[in-house]
Image (cartoon, rainbow, N blue to C red; front, top):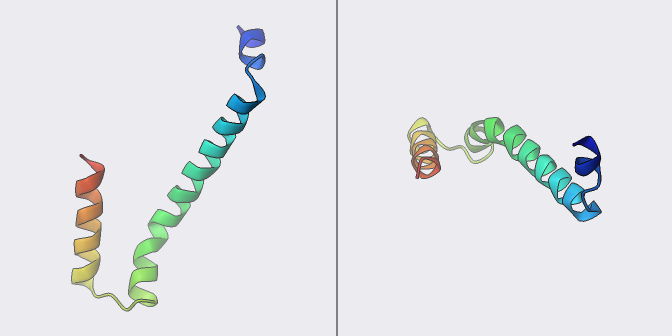
Length: 61
């Protein structure tokens, strides 16, 4: 079984690695978004709530 997994083409391993890095990057940025919106863009609590609500609603579709 291990030999079969290790014999996967190089492109499969590369795409898997790229997917892992992309997912990790998005998970690191997501918690910082409210800080950016309120600190840099000066968005108020209502705007943050609307943005977060839309994000949660679209993620459940």
